[in-house]
Image (tube, rainbow, N blue to C red; front, side, top):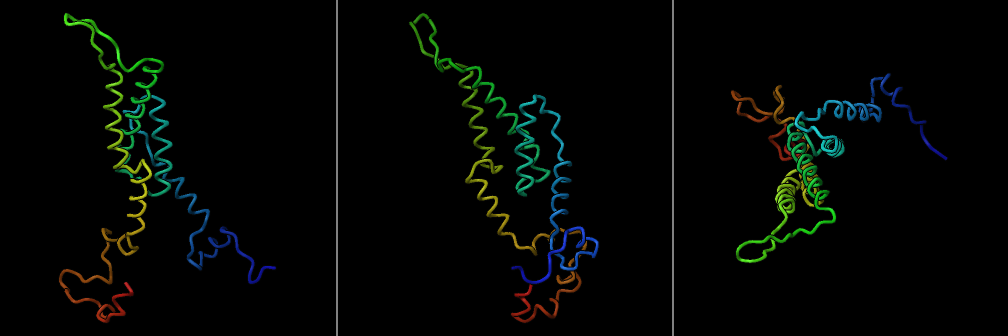
Length: 186
């Protein structure tokens, strides 16, 4: 048996002005959809596979607050390199990574050029994945860093000045931060 008032719908809360100031489920979905609509696939991604890799990765990372708008070019570069790596893999499918050549000194084994390309691309991919959080360890580090940022730091670079911070001309701290209890309140 439930106790208390019956829960109100988000529409009803929005109509009342959301008196509890809690996040509404509908508004959260709307903001994520708006964020995803703002994402434009860079023009240099011309192959459908590149575009799909970019779209799937960025959608997931934007929703998790890992990717920001300035990061999208790096994610696009990653999608391009993954596409190139897959092309190398498809070309080498069923072939050996070595081939024989004849010279004046006899037969020699040489690496297939596509295999060399694949290894070079793989090195670039590993570096990008570590920076962009595209492997589990790097992603955990990014998420841990996002969780460590206190809420007070979110408005650090806002255009309007914070009332609790001293201004350039006024070097004195507000009265409520003078006591140790006041320091903990911020």
